[in-house]
Image 1 (tube, each protein chain N blue to C red):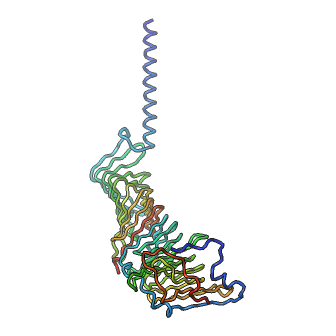
Image 2: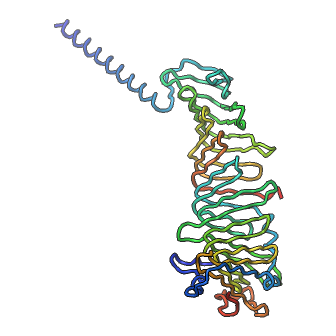
Length: 190
Length: 217
């Protein structure tokens, strides 16, 4: 009789352990699909880092500087604190973007900048640089494209554009504003 | 501002020409008769910022052109231009050029106030057309297709011009009107208030345009 009770207790305990393990693995998988959480496994962590992305012939395409970097095992994403993205395409206007946070996804294909995002693009011919301010910005460094669906303020000298939603194509040197456009042009040059 | 003609309404100039069977251009230069009455576009406008509101904008830095679409409204001091689509550019000296087109079954509009030529008289210009070209350097406004320009004094319409094309040279107080193309029977119409007629006081209520003072060619 005592052996039978011990067996039942052992089976119940094993079942509990199996159920807990199953729940824990499900929880980890669902967290991997959303924002990185405190439970996600980290395999690299560093302060004052510089990440450099190279093209197929070994030229640096862009650099990412950050105060702190965290790499997550499950998603292969990298989170950055106080990031600074610098585009290094020699034949295009130089772009630099800063923010409070960034997440680098898909082996550097996408960089999601968030919090006080400021993108600065050099202008040719001695014109003032173009400065874009928004709360969130998706950068596609391989394509040299930058977009947001958030309210955006663009300033060049004393001219400005306010809008909601924007895409900057730095190769074509085109900027598209998707809605609620208010463009203010000052007559300073005359 | 001028109320645009309704879709399908014949243009007044075309209506007058109907049945006459004349297929020709009708340029009409009105500088001489209007020069004493007209003045420069308000000089203060030149120093004002330009504000353009629209639903959508594309900035092409290579071509140095911006294209606005959707309920476009440009304001610069007393100048106001509206339409459905506008191509806008500036030259190196900051002079502005805009081509505004209207939505289907609608008209683009232009409005500005002139520098006062006579004390107590506020003079404004209103224009409508399917396409309006604004050249800030030459100080001209060109209106194409179903074009009407009216000059107001203290809110009362004094002169009215209509045609298929109206070139309005603000610097030289000069209108150039053209009827429809060679294959149609369009004419131009000019209705000009007598220069010695009484201009209503600024606070008087606006009245409709004078009806039979002017010339029609």
